[in-house]
Length: 358
Image (cartoon, rainbow, N blue to C red; front, side):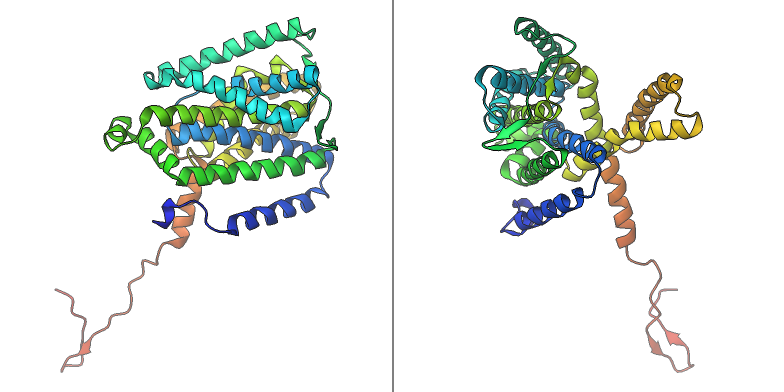
């Protein structure tokens, strides 16, 4: 039953604290450019963890991740613009408002599933984009520039540099991943897994399907809203273009490529999907040069490679990168196939009797 318990004792928290210290020390020698890429990676990991909880654990399809992040981002903008409150207030407010919308969107999931549920969440995305555009126009912003947000304040402390953001996002990211891991191993996580595998059978054995489906949408939406708040403050700006439909698709790609329902899949998928455009750009600059006229070629290659990677994993590796890693580890751990030397007794003629049936 040990695999059904959440992380016991102080060891996981001590390990997370040590990892955070190591990351903070290592980040001191990194240039600002790489720190910025790591910060965007942490934001993606936090948001993808919420979506992986919804799709990977509970089996509910969603294309509304960008919409929930937009709700969190625009909540942060409104709180900062009209109330002058800092990150400690806007972060829970953005998560709470996104959770409330997630609860409303989760109600159709009680009767819809698969393609129809995906269309429902897709409709939420376009509704959120429409509402964001109207809010920008009424509040004096523009569709192109959106709203500017001053650097985040946590009480008297100002989070301004990329290094400070790296420490903050690393702390929140590790906390989110630890919560994801514990939740997956808890009673709630096992209920979500039962609903994902067979919701009718889950209801027969006593799982409250209605309650746990709504809870999955609420928790996932809250995490996405918090990620939207962090992104808005980190960028210092919130605009509709930051929450395009491509963003929602990229998060679905992260959990498909990484591995659904796993913490490692969330991290590995985010690393692969976010670094793929830079890898394509690097390959293109080597082969065809870095001339500005090649920007369209780079963009087309990035979009094509993005689609090829998603389709390839769906067809040939449904378990994602985690499945590949697990098979490699299992290959190294498998016992040797060599037969042990024959053991037996010596017969009177000098031959060795091994007990084999001939």
